[in-house]
Length: 553
Image 1 (cartoon, rainbow, N blue to C red):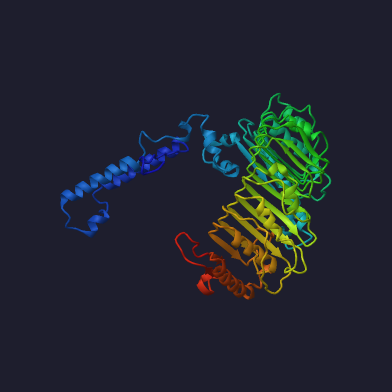
Image 2 (image 1 turned 30 degrees about the vertical axis):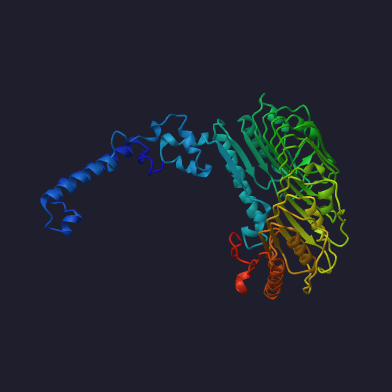
């Protein structure tokens, strides 16, 4: 409750009438001490012995009223047991399962409340614990086995005592071998018999990566009705078929490192309410061609798959993500697609994204990752497809070149900007593995841009191609408000620790700031160098005017 809108509600939940009686007797004893003439005077009387008797009596009366309203229990106090029986488990379910079990020992009448907890989530040990269990490398494996045995015992004990009523989520995350099949089958049986709405089984990081526990999808049909709304499976095997019908209300399906042995498109055909589909690192299928319409699918993620083609029919698709090697991608009827994330492997990524995936031409936000080298496939100077609705683009470019100042393909982005005439913001993150001396130059051929307002470049170290691209943008972006450059290589383009790539920033920054100052005066545009607060102008270069870029750190 917000105290500014309503008086506080004091809930005095007592475990038993016995404890309530003790509190009442304690309150009565305190009241008696206050009436005893031999009791010590209140603190106020000790501070001021000359206080008038009338004021002392009024203060005492006010204190008595406050004690009556807030201190001593009265008829408005009630116990947890006074709440409706169906409300008590709901309150208990707001606690994590472990805390709910601990709370049950407070009162005898509470002891069974945790057995109606709606979310049963169990996180057990993984093989990575071998490195952290003990300093003795020979004792590590035994320690992990003991932890796993304790974990199995805990899960079995919980599901044995649980009522199986009102289960919302059942989740198991633990590195499990195939030898624990009996326990896994028991847990799957409990999740299906209790009709859990959310089922998560993550058996990641097992020692035998090619020995998967089989997850019986047909078990979700055993109750005669659909109940699963979200299904997450990792490091298991499944054998889908078109006969299974227990997925009619399934909204989210995530498969991670799953071995698929059956008719996967036939299974998806039964998921008429599917809104989110993620398939990561799975194998057993050669193509992801789904001829059936998935009219409610809004998010589709395909990553790390060894497949030849992707084809879906999804009229409501709003966000499409693909990470993997260059393959044909066809998305039918995706007129509502607003965001696309494309991370192709190989040097054909940039050209393939802008020329060979017409299904994403209608997006407003594009996020792409590409490897670039002088051997990369070049973009045509004039392309057929236009990204007429594209407003925001983020590019992560890893430049594979022995000479960053050579022809490494970065200038292809100028042609990319030509096919996005209404682009407003461009974020470009670059990584060039080998450093070189500074140089300058220009490149022509980019069309005039009347909407591009903000350009941010990280990993900008005044390589020739970087300078040429920046000058090209400054010359042709008529409404550009700010060009922000950052010499530091960020984790947005290189996953993991980037410190090894940024050891020479102290030597690079002066040259970048000098280039920014000269270029800003030349094009009369604001340029800001992130991380150059100790250099001239604090890294801010250009005419200062109302609405221009402020100091960046």
